[in-house]
Length: 226
Image (cartoon, rainbow, N blue to C red):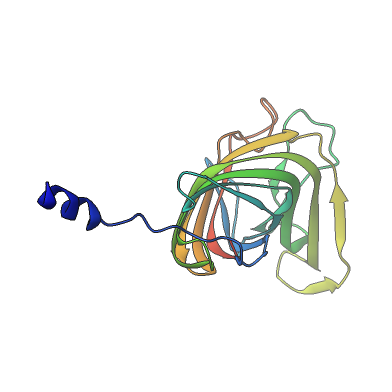
């Protein structure tokens, strides 16, 4: 009987995690390299394409294990895809969105297609030290978004020989060639407030029958307190 009582007394107690003093930092900022899958060789994508995202996330720890939590919140996601000597005809009336090579005529040398989404990411999270936001972290999830804006920006107008003609900038805006909603899978892994993230769109960028079946993806860095 004495041996049994001693064994019970020496049994290790499960450490409780106190979240009362956890930093109340809900912002998640992401910056990464953006690209498309399924892009035809006939479309001259070139240069540094980027993505910039900002979210305000609410974190809901599990009562049974505070190291696990669900994160959810609204935010804005932007992609800036860069092309070279390519006219992207957002204002055209054709069935297909034109990506026209204009290198053999007067053209804008640099061309950018930007999309802006209002999004709501949902993450399943793990944090080794949830009480202070340090330590090893990972998260997987989905984000659902609606398209707010799609526009092009064209700069450095020149002739086919590359001689500058004008410094004017041409901008066009239209959402009619694009799917109005987007669903993307996401993942993050890191230490402390810095993590590496990746996202991949599960839905095509361009609506069915209006152009190539391209799906955006991004790899980059996240800064977050949670």
